[in-house]
Length: 409
Ligand SMILES: *Cc1c(COP(=O)(O)O)cnc(C)c1O
Image 1: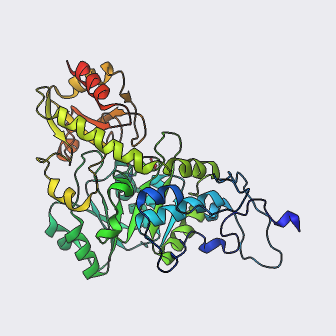
Image 2: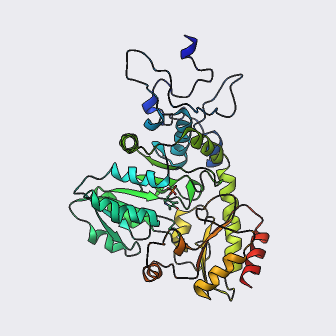
Image 3: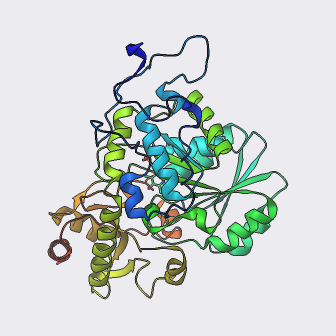
């Protein structure tokens, strides 16, 4: 018998498939703030002698009940206890019924859309999306008979014009990687609701501290947890948030396409999430300081930061975002050569892809997310040569600014 009773009872062991659904708050309970939810959301309350930090269930299999298929645990089914803790917390942070943790942001995007679309279906997608997502939609989906039309998200009438009888869903990213544009969800979610389309939003750049798309009419939220949610440059992951029946469908896709997270990656994310609120708030402050410094420098042609009043989406940001984020971009007057030179001279800013962690990073999208596009196509997307994407970390902003200053001199 003792063999069947784990020492630290993993949460939801009895109902493994529904375990990612956050328990409804007791009636009359206070609504918890995000800063509290990032610490406590989804963690099983324990009695005397229970660990404050969840143990790592680095086990592929769990002893199964006899005489039933119910309650079988296997990481690929999305019910490893470490994944379940994170899933409950993410659902609660995004204001969703349920969440599912996957192997990567790309795995999350692929499974989220495969759960909505069948061969013959049509998807409307914003043309301002992460390079990997663009490849998935433009190349891979064509091979399985899913037709995708790309729409410039600022042309609000274009969304309606491009819908067809077969259109099932709208996909967009906001804030946009790497241009830091912010898409107005209001007209798009009204259209999605009117036509009965699912609105899927990748809000990786903001994290739920700055932006919760479900509050603005989205049905599905996607996060690359590799970025802000984990926040320490040490674990890859992705998450999908939505209704309970929809997340069950995503879970089926994840299981057969094999896009599940490893328990240790889930545990690292659990740990990273606990500081999400303080990290993102500090990154908002630091990025604003860097953007204000960059604004009006003679070496810099343009600064892309939604927190600056002259940004084209400043008003939308004020409506949608609780913070302007830790991502910004600058365009150097000297073009590609000046960008390469500046990156070589930087000492504190690390030249590396990815974003959203404690270290400040710099990258040139022409060598990373948009290396597939031609220089012309990139310029059309607002990413001309000389464009540097900055992911502002947790260092002192004066040090970050001094380093940029010496590199541009
Ligand atoms: C990084 C990123 C992804 C892909 O996430 P991975 O975890 O690298 O698979 C998707 N969308 C956006 C906006 C991203 O920045």
